[in-house]
Image (cartoon, rainbow, N blue to C red; front, side, top):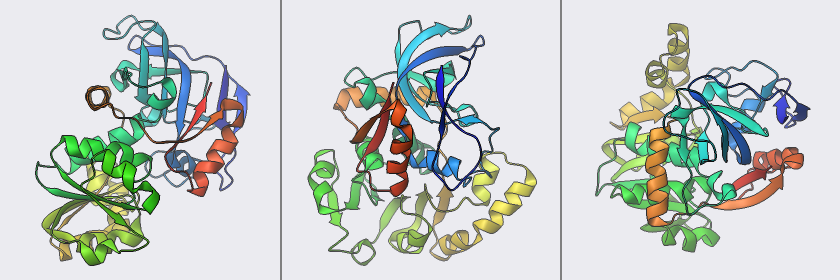
Length: 332
């Protein structure tokens, strides 16, 4: 089979299309013929080595973190899935490889695809939807009738996070460029801020939760709009001591991340708030709940562009520029 592989960590966004053996499955795994795969900023971070402290990989590495496809074989102990099932997944962090014609995946990481989505649409869902679900449910323990601010909600993440937050009974505020206003309001946002005309930090206060999608430079401002005991979970800033402990990292990493996250932890304590960092993990049962919601509410992801697998480098470069409005997809 063909697979898009990186040979070394590099600032240059470039992968090779190589012929590799189709991997064999164990008793709890399924073999999936990949139909489409989502291309994410996470793939760029893996290529340039930015997340090596969180997850270091053996090289060469087949890239790709989420996919949709058809099951071609099942292990003898697989109970809930069958040959021919249409599935989608966020691959386990230590077993990525969506940019290939076939993938082997543990059954605990997959879900049946939503019936209202195509393979291309389904491949755009798992990473962003699980990120939103884990941020809201696992980290924030978000409660109904509370206010949440999701900056940059006009992209692929907002397309999933906003309806999931609304399904949990939250009042959702988001920001973005004016061309994204109508879509974000149509999928459930209660308030939209045009960041070209207004600064959220000047007009928002007493917010219960923030999901940071902007990074370290915005953390101080985002903490400033929270009420006391408010919670912020970052997807882009810095990991901290709490993150290292929660992920059972060795003591030296706990100490290192404690130093790295010391400034944001200090700022959070100063504001009487909580700071969390999230690195999304595979979870098939959570993805099944997302499937149910996507079908019930007829949610569709925001797709920016679609590339053939032969053009995987063009897709990666498109994502690396940060100019995509929604998810970039490669098809097989």
